[in-house]
Length: 181
Ligand SMILES: [Fe+2]
Image 1 (cartoon, rainbow, N blue to C red):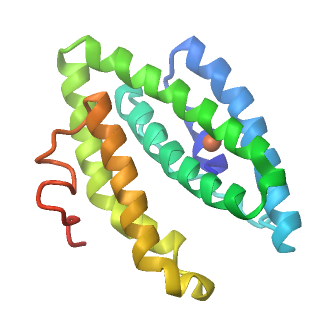
Image 2 (tube, rainbow, N blue to C red):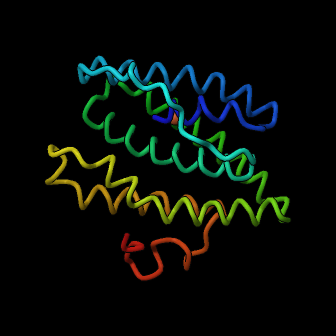
């Protein structure tokens, strides 16, 4: 789900264990992309520019965790329609699990790294509604768009709250509404 971000992340300053994980992660995301392309009859081979990713691990780990939680929700939707693609869901659960552990490790240090990670989560969460809208922009999703959008935002808020990246006040859950972006 996040092939280009994962590829770009490997050029950053990441701990050895994460570098090793990102290599396998990239292979899995590349395989998923091929499966999607076969399914949809499209090709993304023209894409060459990699997205700019943060160089600091405390910020990069939070962003990858965020994008993987988002990818996991889309994988759940996909497998609901295509149970034969369950291996994608298993891979995505593995990716989320790895970055969640890394984020916990950063937060447990409780110093500037933890503070930086929480700030990164707040900024990422603020941009999330627009990202989700972009992913749900296909006309075929129109009848489900509002429900899916809220569901995805709620699930990610719950994860970020549970892991300690956001407080309830900072998530979109404070009054049952999103940020309104
Ligand atoms: Fe993934």
